[in-house]
Amino acid sequence: MTDMTASIHVLLVDDEPDLREPLAEYLARQGFRVSEAADAARARSLMIEQNPDIVLLDIMMPGEDGLSLCRHLTETKSLPVILLTAKGEAMDRIIGLEIGADDYVVKPFEPRELVARIRSVLRRVQKHPAEPEEDALYTFEGWLLDPLKHRLTDPEGTVVPISSAEFRLLRALLDHPRQVLDRDRLLDMVQGREAHLFDRAVDNQVSRLRRKIEMDSRDPKLIQTVWGGGYRLAADVKRVAAESS
Image (cartoon, rainbow, N blue to C red):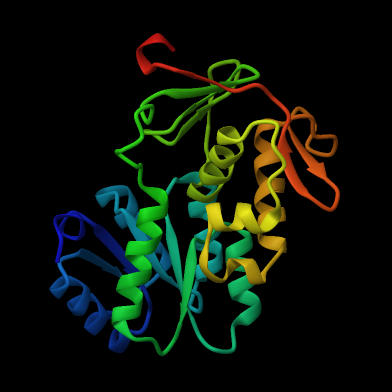
């Protein structure tokens, strides 16, 4: 158990107590702080009350299902999500990745594998302290991205909600302005692992991001498609100190 693990708050959402309760106990023994929810309604309440670091989310639940809740999270919060899926839910896994889930595990799974996935996802979404300009803001075409707060602001000063996957995609583009990034490279940056099996995942992330930052997402000027190559951010990017923004 590391200090980082001890500070991580996991929200486990699953309607099956026979799976949820032993898994919560195992995660607690590994040093995580764990909250449990048996349905999406309780999960929504806990997210407001407790502000967890990561959500483990079952797809098949009565009432609002996991995909609906995942869509809500990726549209409104910068919060990583790992889906818990059954073997027969391949299409749901693809949809989950497309709408912004960070990873998935297939039931039945080894709890140790899940712990490894949690740590892997958090490594991707957390800041890298060794980077000297980590607290510097990105500016492009009047837009402002704060990498520490995961906050995107439009040219009029309005904060635009952005999911954790959209944040990582935008940051990858901002770190390589005017460079062509192919789908495989973007998927490694944004989702990693087996996401490369689903080429539509990155296309859907790009489409979602375009709807937020383009004047007309059907005629994009900032995030350009390079046919046969991938995507390119067609803008100059500057890094500025937070206090000067």
